[in-house]
Every structure is written in structure tokens, then in C-alpha cells.
Length: 113
Length: 114
Image (tube, rainbow over all chains, first blue to last red; front, side):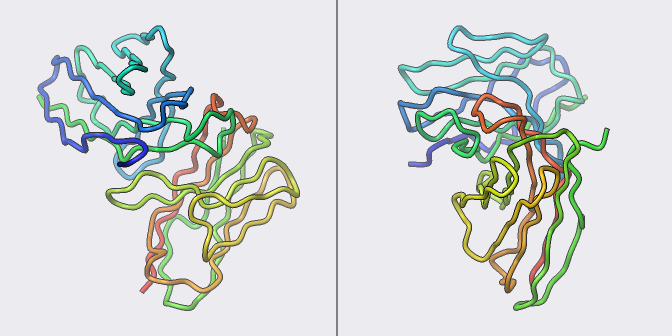
């Protein structure tokens, strides 16, 4: 089983739709979770951290389910500019170091008119 | 606002050739790292550094060398290129070696080894 698993997609949704991505992780000791966004042929950029209580940033909501070991990202009112690949990132083991981050393969979102 | 700068952006090598990918950051970040990204695989850590003079291996270090003589620069050397090293390489930095620190990535270097 991969340490971090994501549905590769693509998710094709019309503008204005709500779309949700899930990401599962294998290590129950993981403590830190993030979503990064990567545009086509560009570098990844931090979208948001995921906190235990869930957190929201505008149209984006991230949630963590420790019992089932999955993280979700919900995008409401999708825009064309949301088209990108969304990378789930989890710390590999229970450490606080950046070198122990594990990246998922990403879920591709295509928002259409 | 340069951030993390990588050069070259594109490179084609023949098997057995060596080369160096350059990475520089102007944010005074202590932590720097190199990743490779391949289709169907997540970003994989090659080498990293938590400060000048300190480097360590990541998940896939074989065939690569690094050094960190200054805070700003973290070059990645391919010693004898192999087709398996065809990939997109990203340099990333962070203020500290902390898992909750934001990673800032360079624009990437696309390497093809024939």
C-alpha cells in the first residue's frame, strides 16, 4: 500500500460546481497534513494546511479524519482558474522535520465552461 | 522577489555525462532540498540540507551528490547520467527544517538522458 494515495482523476467539472478530493494515508502516526496545488508544468505551491478541527479558506475546505486516515479537500463554486493538480502531503512518521514529508501523486482537476 | 531559482530549465544529456543543476534562494532559508517528480509517482526526496555545511540523503539519493557551502546555494550533481534519471527536478526551501513549514519550490528543471 502506498504511504499516500490519491485518485489521479481527472475530475472534469463545470464552472460553479462543488468538487471533493480524498487522500488516504497509511501511517497512523502521521501528524501533519497539507494540500499543495501544482499547475501544469509548474512548481507545487502550498494551498493550505489541514488541521484536526478542519479549516476553511474562502472556497476551499480541508478536513481530516484520523480514524479512517483520510484527508479531504472541498472546492466550492469552482472557477476555471482552479484547474490544476492537487497534491496531498503527509509527514512520513511522527517527526517534525520537513525531510519526512511524503507527497501523493496528485489529483487532476479540470474545470470547464 | 526571486524566491528559489533553478537553472537550467531544460537539459538533454547523453548516458554517462555529468552535470550540475543549480539552485539558489534569496530568502535566507536554512532548509533546502531536491526532489524529482516522475509520472505516476509523487515527489521523491533526493537530498536535503538543514544548513550550510550539512547535507543528508533522502529517499532516492543514488547517482546524485550535493553540497551546501553557503546558505543560498544548493547544487545537485549527476555524476554519470542514466536514462532512469530522466525526470523533472525541483529544488525547494523552507525557513526551518520543520514539517509545518511551507516549502517554496523552484520552477523545475526538465532533464532528459538519452
